[in-house]
Image (tube, rainbow, N blue to C red):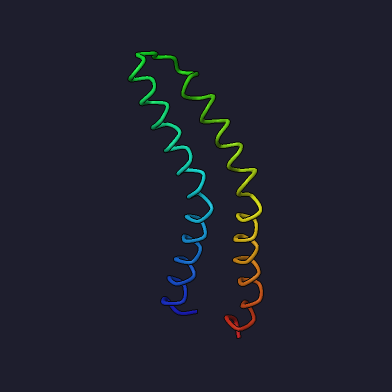
Length: 89
């Protein structure tokens, strides 16, 4: 195993992590921004007002995106297991 190979494998693993976390973080960011603008406009400073909608949208996002996320993770894992003999030998 060379240094270039280890770096490439690490970059691929990081890319998979970004793909898996991206939709969740993007939805949380957009929801927090919308709720924050609503709180600023109405001057309501209630903590649960930002938490409950964000939690709801994250749950919906996980239900919608979980098949895709599972496929990305399974493809990465499958490629790791199938390529182990060529890396070792």
